Image 1 (cartoon, rainbow, N blue to C red):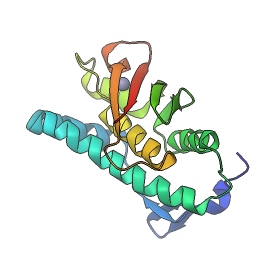
Image 2 (spheres, rainbow, N blue to C red):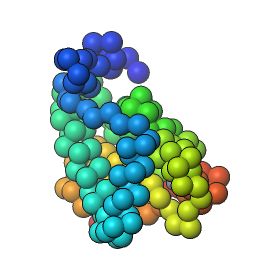
Image 3 (cartoon, helix red, strand yellow):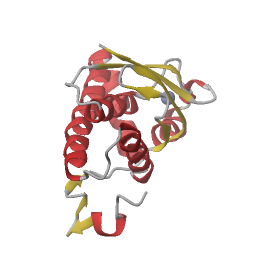
Length: 174
Ligand SMILES: [Zn+2]
């Protein structure tokens, strides 16, 4: 995508890393998956909600700021394409956002950091486990379509952590 120059926008200041002026945290799967496992084991549904809402809020605020700065990204389609590129460049995996619009839709992810990390550390699950990605999706869509936090419900109907072929997310607007 020509609208975004990674060489100038990905910056370091000492040990701090920035994308388009926004500081980002970098963690490997040991941290991310242990965080998820601890939250699920100790808090159950409340822990899952905490993961979801943290990712949603960080993304809603971050991408709103990003889109305000990058006015070249005019259409919702180009904003969704840019978000998918950033998801991939952040090391989260591959996500296909083109099946979604303001009302909702279906999002597919054939490859994911959290899936690979979970399977390596804990093996198959009985329940879908991509809570971070669900929150990430909700926050991005709220930024793209200018909606408040909590506007989108994201249900993961298939998950590679359960041996499904890909992770499938159903998006519903309030
Ligand atoms: Zn999944």
